[in-house]
Length: 74
Image 1: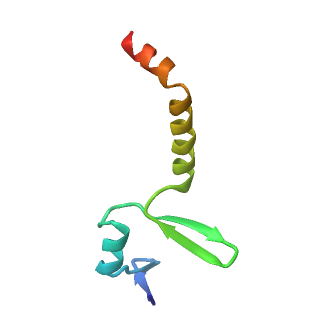
Image 2 (image 1 turned 180 degrees about the horizontal axis):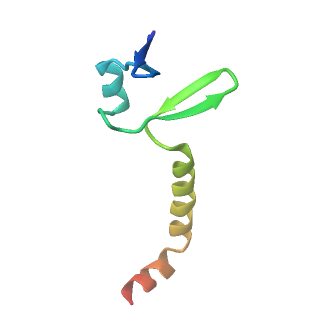
Image 3 (image 1 turned 90 degrees about the vertical axis):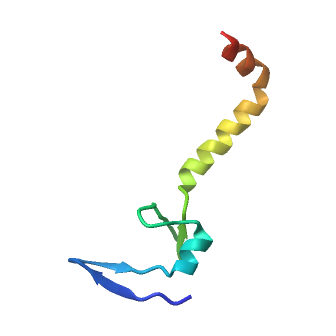
């Protein structure tokens, strides 16, 4: 997909076609995260750092399921 850089006020911006927004499940006002890679950039509708933190949290919750259940009862 080819995108064109356009003027937005005193800045520059890229207009994302509605088909791409639909594929990314994004809408106006949503946040798009950019990660620099050795061969370019990657655009994602989610924060990769937050995703890593959630993976760790889910791992802890799986290992400590019984303890967490007991804590929630109090």
